[in-house]
Length: 508
Image: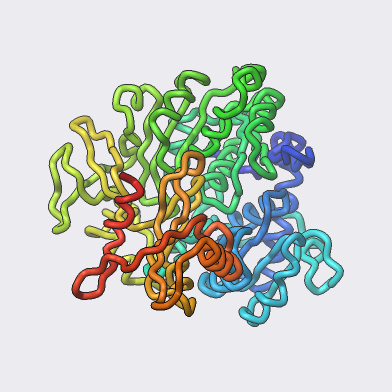
């Protein structure tokens, strides 16, 4: 296994990162220098190995420099979604115990609200900044460009769902290791062994880098001495053009991107040269079988589907040949076994549906949530992402449902409890259920079913009012795209909402 610092010594002028739209580049030599300077900056701010920082950025080169600075200084870094509100961002910054937050100048207007909520966090702005006390680039400009003395590997600390709808950070125990170590190690198996990524590879990332999969895979490409091209935002036609222009060998998408590419006119799709492509990874959301068949007919058997999570407790992989043999599978486990159990934790035979566990021996925890952590484990080293499914006799996994009601829209996880809690506070709402319903392009979209208070009449105007209420308090991706009204919602005698009954009406 290599490291960007190795390539910086052997081929410093080679391009490590390139922004697809602006053409801005970062060579391995520049990446090594700037990440060392940022690592020295962390130490000057007394951010030690095993401690935390937070990052709020659009896709840009300043962001990747900071991730590598954390990676080589033993720092855990939390990349935060740009779609969140100031309150949501502040919660994550506080919850991950970040000592420092660096945010892009694009989001500098959020500084007062975040500083008010997190007064003990040192906040810097990267990019255009009029305040020298907050200017990150000015702060690190004169830092040494050689490695810090206590160099050790750091890792991402990304956020997943919480039991109350609040996101929870996925953490692992800090241990001092060489910076050549990649966390999580499963990425090495997936990228280097399965996909044959190496120093000749050109990886194209069309997705936001604050998500686990694009962040980790683009870093792996550079770790192996290859090149990562980062799209500022996804556009189907532009992505196809970039593949031909840069002779891209590897890329990663979510099924929504497949849909948008397939909706381009056939003549336009066929005009692009995709012959350099060796592998297209896809993950993060279920892919409709018909969409996958159309992609295979178009690009050939170069799709690799995998099933994993931010927890990095395991991964299954399905090659195109695997999928054609067993349509709908998400593959076989690369490390350890897949265990499917009933509600009592007893192992089920092949073909029977139950809770899916990775029996990989890999440990993780949810930050400050021991109950959620405990519920994820059947026993030490055997944990679940909260999905249900079955395996066949050959060990291929098929997912049939999600144990939780997480909504996956365009590859983005949306947790409905927070939206439910907000709507329940509206004076006209007596009861509410929020869940995902089918959306041809995005996979799922957010639906709310509302029971209004007595005397409040359902109407299109009331529906729009409630949706605007959500949009004004939450990030727009969490707001319902539609609202239906019912005279009552299904609940058990003990008061538990049986949301499955509602959801089944829409999915059936």
